Image (cartoon, rainbow, N blue to C red):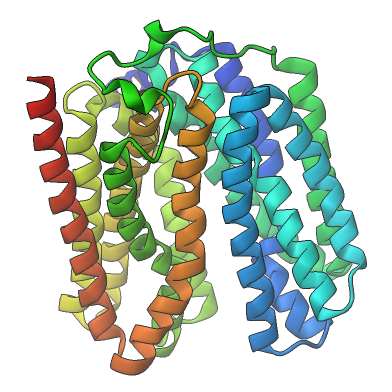
Length: 407
């Protein structure tokens, strides 16, 4: 049994190009220093003396900056290539944290937070677009999964280190360390990652796709349909970070330690299981079938909260189901976007895909708290279940339409 498990893990990580490992290492360094945003609300309310509402405006500025960065990053990637966009985003993004550290008024902090988020998030579409330059097409999904592995591992390190620094040497050091790790990641990227771009040839493009998608994202009706349903699911998924902790604290009466431990299970499962899972299923089903399965798993997660009431063990069932849905949906969603694009539009497609999550980051907290505040969490879980199942149904019909187009 142990030998079979070891072989599965070895096979799931083997065969990936050297550059994919290197850009994953860069992402690990970058995300291991990601500690300002998780503690920004606490910093603004406790250290700077702003109200919770005022801190909320700053977080909204962060979300809007993320949307702008995803959009701009996609355009810059198509114009200048993924390599310079990744490097300058890391370098300048690190510098922005040192600028943000100096701001004191609410408006100065909000504006600087917007630009800090925008500069840093130009990295995401360029980073994802680089997969097509460094990885053969049959390894796209595992390459995405390795990047997610590095990012999730980094996110498990960053907030923990940030909490220690805030408690021992002060909040200002969060900005210093976050800025330095961005710049170190930029240095590692420039030193070790080779500069390689997609060849501007049409032979890399999926020949079964309509020719118009090679030039415009918005004219690609199938991709925009996919993006709409993926946004619905992302809004539901983001409740995991916004309304769910409030529910666990206020309704289930869990302690902060217990909530933290439950949420940490998500990252642990991803680190332990995503790569082997992707390896096992990537060639057995179509992309849209797997994307739909992930949506259904997320819907079942929220349905378990609706059915389970306040039984604490239901929270664990929810964590497992939502994580399984995330591990299946997001990597194959990213691969679907990559495969729809040509080399000329890779950045735009990745920018649009990144904008899905940036937009859901802005929409999810306000929509979730509004529903829960007016009608209760019981209704919220039912609404989120419906969003996921409607999205899965939409993806099912999208798959049927694509099959007819190919036939």
